Amino acid sequence: MKFNGVNHLAMATGDMDKTIRFWRDLLGMRLVAGVGQPGYRHYFFEISQTDLIAFFEWPGVEPVEQKQHGKPVSGPFVFDHVSFGVESEDDLWELKDKLRAAGFHVSDVIDHGFIHSIYSFDPNGIPIEFSWNVEGQDIRSNPVMADSAPSAISQEGPEPRPDEWPGVQRPTPPEERKVYPGAGSELYQGKRAEA
Image (cartoon, rainbow, N blue to C red; front, side):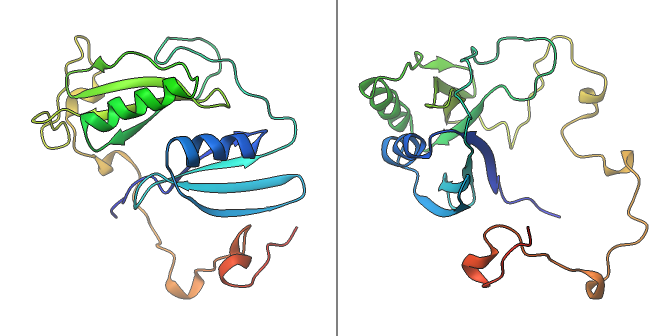
């Protein structure tokens, strides 16, 4: 099994038009698909050739309170921020200038050793980071564990250890594989999901 990227991140908005203006028109991510019906929309923006970010638009969704990226919290919590890679350091500075010109708060450029990053928020309050990989600092080829107090399991190394989970006893045979129509299947197969 091999992963090929983030198919899509699914976020939520109460204002799809404002979301389109930010993600498509300010950041330059193409709007490549949209499904919906009254009271619900689901739109997809292209990050790269293999990665998308999507937004559900639901009535009553309000922007979240902005939380500083990486600041510890307590209690139920699930998402801190998402970082989007850029091709060059010039791209990072161009984004910083565009965000500032559009009236969005954007941080200084921060050096994290292997990446340089800027931090901002989209109109929905979603914390976003943009990162450029520092030349010669490839953590994918040369993983680094610089935690001064690493967890025991992290010290086992970077490679997956599938033996830590039960193995599949009975793979689903091809004749038993069934794919059900869902929202959006009508765009390509003419099928509609059942309500």
